[in-house]
Image 1 (cartoon, one colour):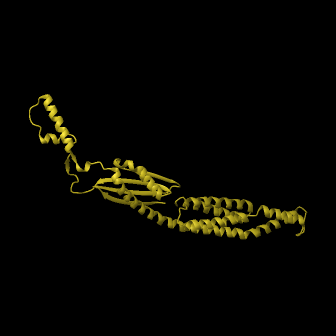
Image 2 (tube, rainbow, N blue to C red; image 1 turned 90 degrees about the vertical axis):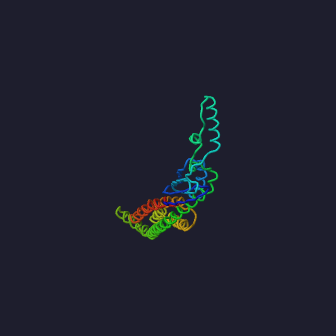
Length: 290
């Protein structure tokens, strides 16, 4: 299922923004884009996502910005760096016997002494709790969108299951007519060959019984009815049902294919073809469900 969510938190002078989106996949696939200071947290982010999402390609983007505040973008002096720079300059002046004074302006120009307040590198471990909050907020919104889409898919799938049920019922009612048709066809063929048999002839009865047994599709129809019930149960539950429904769709396809081969009737074959086409559409939709 598709969806998008965004979450934002702020702490320790940093603002963290998380955006996540999902597209359809049969399995789970996670792509994460992180700022370099937070790259160490990627395994934890993956674990959090996998606990809440079981299917789809998840694209996660995390941005990190210095929050606006009284000290933001103000230059600060690194006193330790200034002391080291002064010692080095004094040592160099003494070694080269250079005259003059070491001014504050010269000292501030030394590398690392004067730096911007927004150039600090954050502590990833300290930011992890607030990053969790932003991620959960983004996932909540994305999952809400996925649930809305899922509700529409469930309605569509239930309609398709109903069509399959109608086809199975029509096939079941057709079975007695198929047996009568085969009996009449067998008798007419025997008469054409000059071997007419009475309706109560034991040989004819045995042959008809054999044909009925060979073309009996009651077992397939019973299994299909069971699969229909399981589909409705899965669609009405709260647990992830995508993989279960995909399996049931494969089994229903197999049952329709088997009964079509066994029945050997044009009317039943037409229903089977329509039902298999409907199952293909069901499997396409089920691939979007978690």
